[in-house]
Length: 112
Length: 113
Image 1 (spheres, chains in turn blue, green):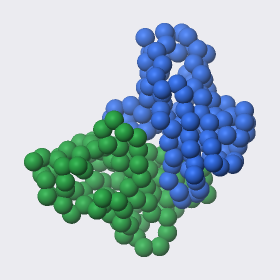
Image 2 (cartoon, helix red, strand yellow):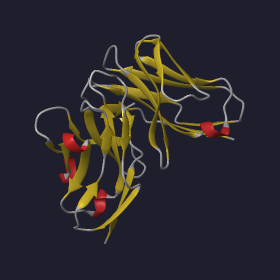
Image 3 (cartoon, chains in turn yellow, brown):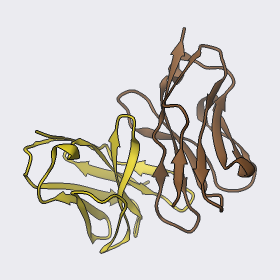
Image 4 (cartoon, one colour):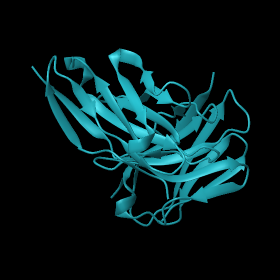
C-alpha cells in the first residue's frame, strides 16, 4: 500500500534562515503530490501540488517554493523564513482520482 | 475558482443528539467530495466520500453524508452523538478531471455529557 515519508518531524528555525522539507512516497508510481499547511481555524491550506516530475502548481503566493526532482520526491523550500511560515506542514498523495488522500506524519515548523 | 465552505467553526451537541456539520462547494460540475476527521493529536482519516451513484453515502462510525446537487452541499450527519465523536471535521473537494484537492476550514465538534 501507499506510504508517505516526511521529515523532519519538528523543526525550529530562526527568521531569515533557509528551509527544506522532504517528502517521499512508496508503493506507487507517478503520484500526484501535495503540500498543505494546517493552522488552527484555517483548515488545510493547499500550498503546492505536482502531477509529475518538474511540474509544480502554486496555490498561494508566499515565501515558499516547491520542487519535484524525482517521481516520488517532493520538496518544500524557502530561501528566507518568515515568522508567518510557522505551522504544521503535511505532504499528501491520493491513490487515484476519486480516492482518499494518504498523509505523511507532518512537520511542525516553528520560526523564531 | 473552486472553494469549500464549512459553516460553523465550532459545533457543540449533547450526547445522543443529532450531529449536523455543513459543507457547501462552489462549482457548476459536481466535484469528488470527501469528509475527513482528525481526532486530537492524530492525523486525518477518511470518513466517507462521494464519487458517483447513490447520493446518500455511509461512512465509518455511523456517519453519513448526502450530496445535493441543487444545493451544492454535502452535509455530514450522525443520528446520535457519542463522546468519542469529539474531533475536528474537514470537508474536501476535488474537481473532476483536475488535480487540486481543496479543504474547508474545518469544524470542531464538541460533545456535551
